[in-house]
Every structure is written in C-alpha cells, then in structure tokens.
Image (cartoon, rainbow over all chains, first blue to last red; front, side, top):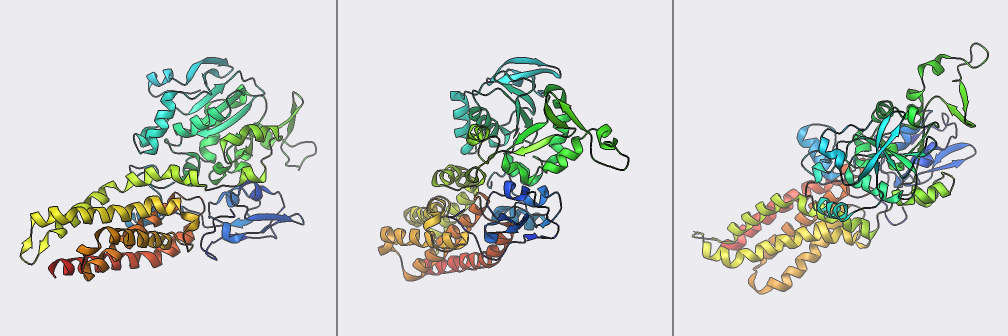
Length: 99
Length: 382
C-alpha cells in the first residue's frame, strides 16, 4: 500500500532464500506486495509493508518463510493480556469491534 | 450436502429452488440482492444482530452449473455470502460455504476457522468430487491466512493415488489421471482469487490470474467510513459510564455534590467526552492519511487535541486553568485510546507494531487520565 505504512522495523518476517524454490506462492497470497521474485528466488521487497498475517508462511511449500503471525488489533491484544491468552479479537464473541 | 439446522432456513429468501446433483439436491441461490439483504447489511454495520448473521454451510448453486463449472469458496457470514453471490450474478457456478461461525473470510482465516481443515472436511461432506469433474476451487486471496493450498492438495489426494507409483518402482509421484481432456491429479487445487469479490469476473476474463491491483488490500476513505458505525457502537457502555461519572463530578463543590450544579455543568462535561470519543472513532479513521505520525495512538492524540481546542471555543469563559488542563489530558487520552483500537479494523497494522505502540501509549493514556481526573477535581474545588 502506498498510502499507509505502519511502524518501521518491527515485523518478525524472515525468509530463508536457500530453501526457496521460486514457486511464487508468497507473491500471490501477500496482500501488501512484500515479496518480489528475482533469479528464481523470492526476496523481501517491502519489509515494513508486512502486517504479519501469516499467509505466505502457511502457503510456502518449502517452509522457507517464518513470521510470528497474529492480529494487529489493540483490543485483541488487551483481551489477550486480560484473559492471559494469545491476542485474539472479539470477532466471534459478543464483543464486536475489530476486523 | 447443505444441511439446514433450522428447517425454515431451507426457505431462505435467497434460495430459488433445488438442483439435482450426483451428491444430492443443492439449493440454487439468486445473485440479485433484495431490499431485505441490503437492509440486513445496514443493520449489521450498526451491530444489530451482528453475531447471528449467517447462512448454512455447504454447497450452493448459482445459475445453471455443470460438472465443469467453477467452485467459489466463502465464509458463512451472510455479508460475505451476499457479496459473493452478487459479484458472480450471471455466471454458472458452485458456491462452497465453509462453517466459520458467521465470521467473515479474513477474520475467520486469521482464527483458523476458515482454514485447511474445514475446507478439506467440507469438500468431503459435500462430496464435491462427485459434483464436479475438475479439481480447481477458487478461494478468496485473504483466505490464504487460514488455507494452505499445498496442504489442501495433499490432504484431498485419495489414498490410492498417494501410494500408487507412476511407472517405475521407487518414484513417489502421485498418479496423474487424464479426465475429459483435463489433467487431473487426485487432490484439489486451490487457486487464490482476487481480494475483492467484485473483481472475480475480471479475474476469470484474465484467465484465472489476479493482477497486481486485485491482490492488494486497500483502505480507502469509503472502506474506512463503513467500519465506523461498528466501532462507534462498540464502546457504548464505557461511554455511558464516563458520562455518568463526569456528570456527578461536575456537581462537586467544597460542600459536597450539588445536583443543581451537576445539571448546569454536567452537559458540558458530557459534550467534551462525546467530542473526544468522536475524535478517536470517527475523525481519526476518516482523516487517517492526513494525521501526522505512524502510530494510531499518536494520530488519536492529535485529533483529540483538535477536539479539545474546539470545546474550548464553546466553553472557554466557564473554565479555570486546572479544569482546562484536565480536559486536555482526558480528551486526548480518550481519543488516543479509541483511535488505537481502530488498528483492529485497519488493513495494514501488524501484531508486533501494535504491541510496540501499546507499550508506549497505554501507560501515558492511563497516567494522563488519572492526572486529568485529579486536576478536574482540584478545578471543581477551586
């Protein structure tokens, strides 16, 4: 996204290029054009665009991508702290903010 | 099979009739949204019946699909379902609705309910392999957060083909079958479609290839504006508590609480809080790209300051200095906190980023709220 960039240098995204087979799946599933393909291998183009959704990592057949994925949602993180669980937005409960 | 928990649901207004398939009868839906659907969307945006706006999971038909027609996968949130059927109106296709407990595709995928396991199970339960002769299913791109294409292929590959070896012994390649001229391997191939359902027809015209624009998630003014009602209604109880608290505090004098004073000054306090809430939940999302800073808490602080200045213009003569300072602190905290909560509605914030901004912002918001209350009380006792 050209208009919106969130905080810099915070995301946990890691790509192991040695494992990459160049299938390009990460480019297809990423909603923010984080990846590029060069010389038959993926590389990270726009790191700060990553929102840690985890689609790339889940869809990488070579397990070459790591990202600690989760909801980028303050209410969800607060819920997680209060209930001592992983951050989770109230999308399925009675609370309906978020997403 | 589409099984209806509630038999009345089988007569839902969007179902036209039932089409016979080798896997049983499948409800055929209309791609035309009726007034009822549009009204339902409007209500849901305002949080009315939002947690129970769902369709029965299973297979549906739209138009006159055959065994070579496309299959589109969606969530059982009625808004997602309506979006899809409206966008593919005029096509002959199958719709596979996953059980996401009435949650939209992106959120459900994040939770894993719109996920590999549910898709694989739903394919089996609906006997999709008997209904269609090809093995391509189209999943919205945002579903990729929960659905792994290669895992779906592996898990739907029939055991027979997985163990059969093609040709020479030792090769573990799955057997490829040629069927109706289509190359069909055992497993289902997930093709990730465009982010937005309205791009599906263009996606098909483009030979099932999503362009760069179709793959990107946007966050336009109208997309942001649509989310405001839900967030606005979300904090209603906290808002009422704050109203009540400040109404009482407004009546504070050295001799105790004066109801008369509360009636006179309370409305100003309520107005200030409402202004701060609106600044955080309405103004910040609308003006998002124009507000300085990257963190939502800071953007909310800025719009809270603007709201504070506006209320000063209304109520300036009646305020002493501690009260003024108190309102600055309180209004900015409310606006900053509510704006920070909009990260959950945004389409570009990361977990790590939100955690980072919360670590800084929450202590400041807490301290300034408490300090604000202290100054307010001091101001009333002046």
